[in-house]
Amino acid sequence: MFTPTPRVQVPSVAAKGETFQVKALISHQMETGLRRDPKGDVIPRKIINKFACRYNDIVVFGVDLHEAMAANPYVEFYLRATESGRLEFIWEEDGGHTYALTHQLAVG
Image (cartoon, rainbow, N blue to C red; front, side, top):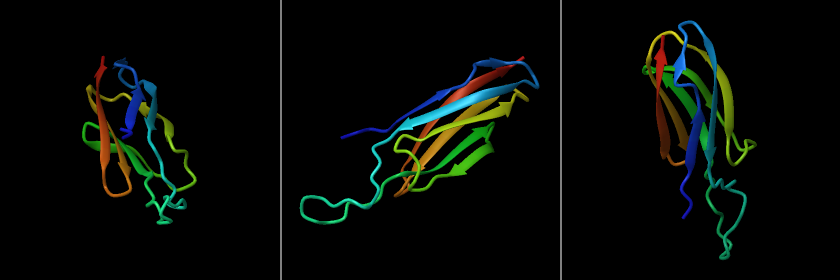
């Protein structure tokens, strides 16, 4: 069985007020919901449908993803370093299963 693998690239340290780049990717075995199994039954859709980034528990970036998105969604965005704290990255798939990563950011 394939286990989705989330990854992020974000600096560990940033200067106060600095804008920094965030790259997030999840390797995910997508199913479109358009294929059938050997018995002819429709294989249920299973895609990553939401991504959010929280900075100290405040959602600072979020996106809804749809069928036309890649199987392994890659998202790139920028944040401004305001204070040291936790960045939390959350991916949601159909059926409600979530995958998350956390990262500590030191602002100096």
